[in-house]
Image 1 (cartoon, helix red, strand yellow):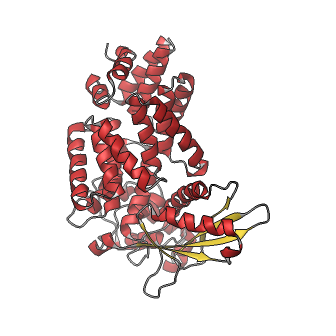
Image 2 (image 1 turned 45 degrees about the vertical axis):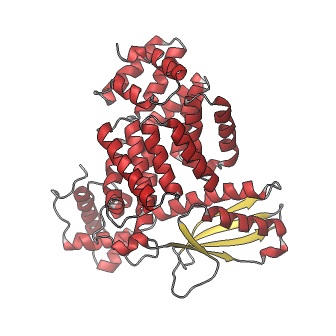
Image 3 (image 1 turned 90 degrees about the vertical axis):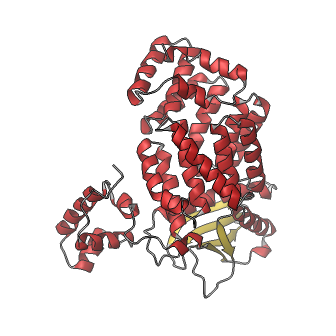
Length: 444
C-alpha cells in the first residue's frame, strides 16, 4: 500500500495546495492565497489524501516530497544557536547548568551548536536561555524556529540539588525530545534551514512509536533513500536500523532478509565511522538479533559512556542484562533510568522496555496491565502478546492465556516456535528454559 507509482498523479492545482500545506498555511489562508472557496479547498484536500493514501494533513505534508532531496542536504549541518536572554554569570548555579546542558546536547553528535550569530548560517532552531530566582534558582528554556520569534516550546528547569551534571542530563533529554516534536510540526521546504535528513528522521521516530507493520513500511520507504546510497545520512541509517530491529523482534516479515539488511547497515557504518555512537548502536542491534548479547552489552556501554542521555541504549541494555542473568546490573540500571529520564521525555519504547522488565522481575499483574495498554494502540506487537501469555501461565490463569494465544495467532497466522527461539538466542540457558517452559501451550 506504500508503493505509489501505480496511483494517479496529483493535478497541478493539488500540487499547489500541497505545497501551501507544507508551508504551514491553514485552509482559510489557502483560500485567500489561491482565491478559491473553502469547499473547493476541502474537496481538493480529500482527493489529495486519497491519492497519497493518508488520512490527515500531517501525513500528507510528510508523504514523498515532490522535489527530490538535494544530495548535498544529506551532509547539511543541523544548526542550533543558544541565546542568553540575561547575564547568567550572576547566578552561578544557573550558569553552570547552562554550560553543562550545552555539553550534554553536544553529546548527541547531531547538532552544530553555537552561541554566536553568523551571517552565513541560519539556525534550524534557536534556544533562548534565561535565569530566575523567584522560587529557587531555575534555567528557563524556549525553542524557536530558526531566527523567527515563533516559540515552539518552553519550560523551566529547577535546580533542586547540587548534582548539576545529572540535572543537565535530564534537561538535555527533555530538550532533545521537544526538538524532535517541534520538527514534526514543521513543513519541509528545500529552502528550510532544517536539513531534510533531520526532518525525515524526526518524523519517522515519532511515526514509529505506533510500533506497527504499517509504520515500519512507511518509515522504510522514507528513510531508505537517505540511508542506502553512497552518500548517506548517518542518523538516517541509525533510525532505519532501529526500525528493522523492531520489525525483527515483532515478527513483521522476512526475518532472514531483515537481518541481512541490518548486517549491511552495521558493515557500512562501522567501515565509515567505527567510533560513532550511532554505528555502535547499530552493531548492538545486530548482535542482539544474531544472539551475541554479550557483544551487544559492550557496544551499549560504550554508547552510554559517550552519551549518558541515550534513552534507547539504557532501556535495551537493562533488558539484556536481565536476559543474560546479570540481574543486579539490570536493577541498578533500571533505577538509574527511573531517576534520570524525565516523565515528559518518555518515548513509547520506554513502555515496551518497562513491560519486559516487569516480567523479568516477576511483577506479572503489573506486566499484564501495561502490555494490555500497549496492545490497545499496537495490537500486532507480538512480544507483548507473549508477555501476557507468559504472565498468565505463571499465575495459573489457563483461560486468559488461551484467549491471548488465540488473539496472537489471529494477528500473526504464521507465528511459531522458530520466532521464540530466534529472540532467545544468546540468553542464558536457565532463562531460556524458564521462558520455553511457560510458553509451551503456544505450540500445542
